[in-house]
Length: 398
Figure (cartoon, one colour):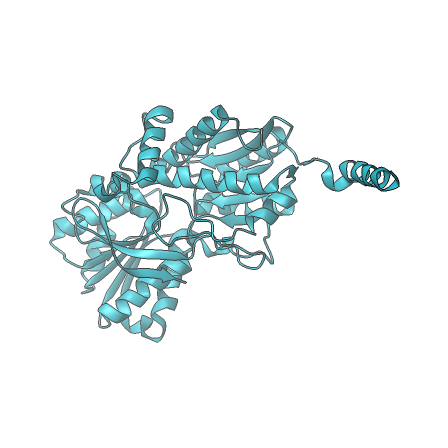
């Protein structure tokens, strides 16, 4: 009898201890988790707006099934037009007026950079950023910012390794966007080529995201005598570059970064025939690739798109990105349990172990730690065959 009384007393203490209590940050209640984001639904890179739309659609589907641990996700997605001042304005609104728990998956390097210090100073998660900038892996100085996509260093490491092995005497020209996005990729390529960088890179040219065309830059790069061209651009300018290279009769080996590799947003506007032979890196299943048509995960994604985002392009991998990043966010929130504070959200985001989602290419996994925020460090090289991206070679790990 005494033992039974002691056990009952212990159970009562445990059930009322602080560890068992729910902990909520701003934007969280027993029924809701409020997230905010900025996305370029308008402006020069509006093609990326579909990422936000597919994420919103995923959360709508999830909410119809009960949400996360009984809480529905409310995503407030605002247009920033890919304008850093507008991003600052919209982010302040999300934080100071809407009181969101976190800024989830904002799109763009210059735009996310504009709110980087502000969000870290306020200790607000800036999580699963859609940007390849290296700055997002700096937990020592900016512990509240983390990207989802591979950073520039990881991607250019893959490109540089291939070039040094397959074409060591290449004469390289580089077109790059004149901001952190383009500059990081150019810097990463120089690092990847190492001692041979100065010898191999014979010309560079930059452009502003507000430029109407990049035709003059392509003509200038062709005149350098280069036989290899890296187009460190977003989708719109990749399409222009590929088309201009073809129209000039120039036949360099071309590389585009994964943010500019969408068949729907970049290669189709360029011309699929003109895009044949272009190379990139990849880590998600390409919805334009017929080999995935019988894949259960792909079929599930198609069914989701048709029901929850019927206007979305079923050949656009940006819609896969939105779907997958929403899934990663849900996993992080599940791991948070009832401790839905901003601090625990970042702790769980920095504790992912071998998270392998169905729409990742085989072998791709999310791994993070408190000292390394890179969520995806593995990629495959891919070459466009006129209809789809074709993976070749082994999985590359940075």
